[in-house]
Amino acid sequence: MHEVVIISGKGGAGKTSITGAFANLADNAILCDLDVDAPDLHLLLSPEHKRIEEFYSGNEAIINQEQCTKCGLCEAMCRFSAITQTDEGFAVDPMRCEGCNVCVSFCPPQAISFPSKHCGTWYESETRFGTMVHAQLFPGEENSGRLVTLLKQHARKRAEEEGHELVLSDGAPGIGCPVISSLAGTNLAVVVTEPTLSGLHDLKRVAKLCTGFKTKVAVLINKHDLNLAQAKAIEEYCQEKGYPVICRFPHDNAVTEAMVQGKAINETGDSTASQLLEAAWSNMLNLLHDSK
Image (cartoon, rainbow, N blue to C red):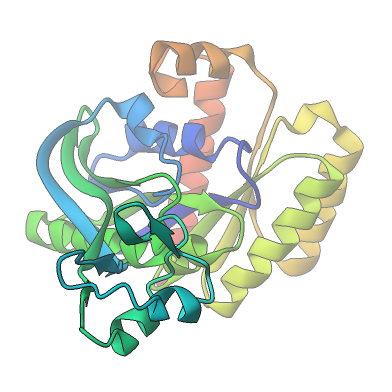
């Protein structure tokens, strides 16, 4: 079984559109959306939830007003200013609480509980392209790396149970914790970039991260015809580093039209864009087979 993740150095580079198109071309894959902070793949695939699970991570302090003696020690010791005195007594601001446990440990009457924190929801769903594992963190919640790891583990389990050969994932943008979790154990990362100075800069950063995980890198240049000089600079960098460029995708209004319709790019009819994506998919599979 192989694992491929589509990533980009920043948001808005087109990785979700590419993932949706690849999902349409894959005939034996489990789909996974690892961009748990801002998932978008469901907008293209319209998943029907078959399993819904709450995600808990970290802890949150809660003061029991009946046991609290209002000594104020918790407010004094909280370095995050998460505890304040109100008309009803001392209370914890959940947006400020970092779950450090100091107030819980030092509360004289032990009036502060420390339950696990409900941070979001994860799903197993059916789509027209097959099974999809995905999630959504609540706004402002952290621990997305842990949730990404959970999704990957579940996707692998489903792939093994159902005999799928590939886990195809839409990764998170950037080089932060969710991307790091996305890359662990992944065979190939397809990095979607754009022909700009920042696109090249972001490509270098995320490719370096992939190298650290010994994950093979392939590059797809999106909207390459908007700046041919910068596209050439990206190709020269890829040639220098040995990163295969699997597709030079042009700016195409068909991409926007497909998004508006809630479809993958290659679901809207035979077009140059569809042919390019089929070639990119074939190139990607060849890289996977070569990595055996």
